[in-house]
Image (cartoon, rainbow, N blue to C red; front, top):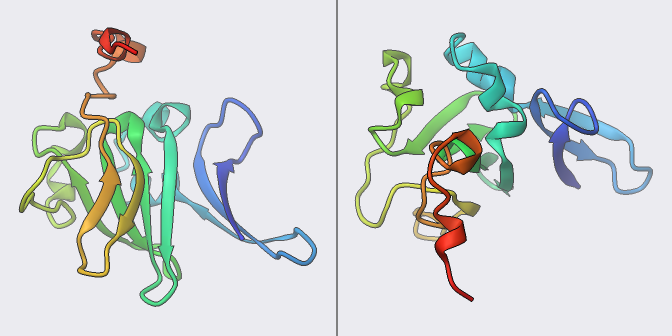
Length: 157
């Protein structure tokens, strides 16, 4: 089984994915997503790899061993190799200031069709090899939690 969380139970300081043995519940592997980001970009803001990242969905392709993760709070979907824990790609708007450092240039994917991630959920890779996710369509990084406008409140029931 895979589960997501943090190294602490509440007010997490790092985003992790746990692999657990279904027979006894023991943790057999911990993938620290925050450390993977920091290995590439040591200047990446710590607080945006913790609680504010809002890692709200992930998908493991058991054949390719690709782990696709949504960090909703920073409007990015990314992929790592689950076994080596190496970053493969990041899908985010090219204007996302969090990924302007040249260290990200070899990881960023370009949009072919559709929209860049904005407040996204539930990432996966389709049979055709496309990135699929539920896109809320509003910028979480600049959202009301970070002093921006609250676009969600404007939606009507």
